[in-house]
Image (tube, rainbow, N blue to C red; front, side, top):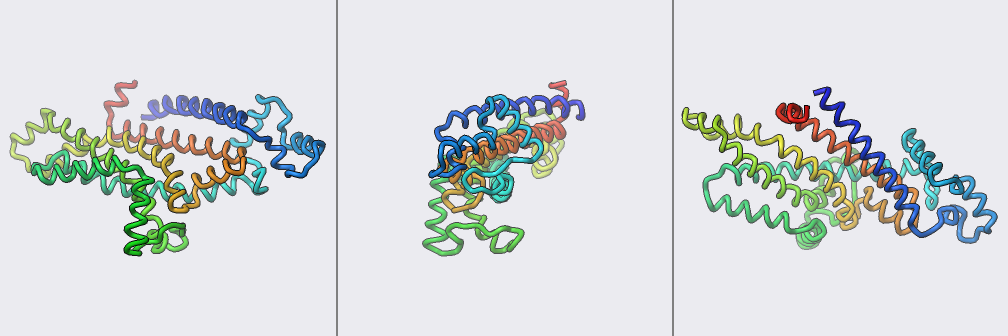
Length: 316
């Protein structure tokens, strides 16, 4: 397992290195001069030149890239050109809120998608399987920005059960925080739950075709024991990989959901920074988001290999 993990780390670092070059290059092609933003609209050309030198923007692009990357690796992200506050503080607040939203969505996706996948994979009744299949198809077809608006209309405007938007930290007030979290997390979780249900049902049906399941059935083992003790554990490894991919997609989809529910996360910070041309904040945000995604994918692969030794042998 250690050898497998050591083989995965270099590829993850290579992806991060390529992503850093792409993010740095693309944002340097964006319109606007950060030195002018930092100096202010009424600054003279001499003042702008001095600010550009202080920010290191008059150096060559490779030197600017290495300087920025060195700051990222040492935790020195600099200050926002527009807000004048440390970028690490801005990102820390937004990233914590986005991870809170994503974690809530992951929990709901597993709680909804797991039972639905079991029903689709092992239930014998056509009616319940048909209803579950229709529900998962509907959940997959409706994008988060549509389901988010529908949830607000039903639970916040019509019935006034939940707040329409905003954020209260779970650590500050757990009960109130959950009320603010439910709708955005549900809007983000529904498509992922549908995907998990479909993959889990397919994986379980494939396991049911294995000889050891037929032998267990022939020996008279109860169906519940076959499903929970033999079929489900062997069907889970590929589903874990799908879950890792869905987590990455949820991090991307959080931008739209945060805008709908006025959730002060990374997505909202990216939109505000783009509007104000604060590209230095966007540059660091994109690299950190990619890093979180790559780390999650690597951890998912390692978890997959830990529960399925065949994967380690195939890639040995």
